[in-house]
Length: 410
Image (cartoon, rainbow, N blue to C red; front, side, top):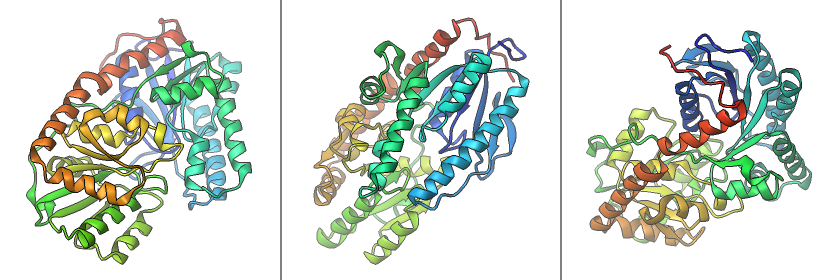
């Protein structure tokens, strides 16, 4: 195996749907591996301010220009084919410095297993699947009336990904069970590594009353705005709160972007909520901190479906890091993450979701208790510092524990 300049084995992480360091989970993984002495390389799409190649905090990052799919099923097929070819080209370029001991692929999508097989034959590289999403269920959520052929194709790609993987890291117990049941993996080859936040970086700053826009309370959303994310249900709940319940003392700030952002802006305007709901698009971390430090409640409107019910929502734990009580639909893995730090509405019931928001903003003592419990749960159980040992341990197992070298400053 080829080592880096301080003696650590080279490892590669492939991502397709986000870039680093914007992808918080993957960036924490990179930092943990770097600190353990591994020589880390990433291949991912190019962000707005990214360079084709740069070294960020000791991690080598190769990027390609992303392809905008347009939201259709055919568009995603074209995007994934383009991404695979662009990734394969950059992996080949990155390999010029030497072979990789471990190649990790993150999903969605489940398309990089051929690279895992190729470099296993060529270099003896181990293949690690970092299981972020359930792609067949994701298709069902985005295209509920879609054709069955793409769904069968996604099941095939998932099956081949599991078959190729030497080890799997799953974000929760539900995903780990699917890796065993549907993927045929041996339980001892699947490790749960939760997407734990970094509580040292995600903590309250001084609230900014201006962000409430003249109102007493602020309800905040942070996350992607796609068809399966339920932001349309937040707008419906805000409509119910303002126009049915007559509550005008709650401002809504919804942060994030996605395929549905423009449609959501139009829906907000159609409902006459321009003075009540702000859709910011993507915002810098400083804005996120300010809003979440000022907000009264954090919103998790993910509707119940085969994907969301067993998925861990990163925003839930980010709210908890900021001592924000959470309003969520009653989903299996959301309860595992939030516990008593959330109130749970009947799944997909807009009026009940709205009622839970009003219930919390009117009960300061309960909010304070829930916020405290959430922060404590993050610090004691969910934080990345409690997850990274299992994650790095998978690499040490794959490399025989001999690949890491003492980390040095870049």
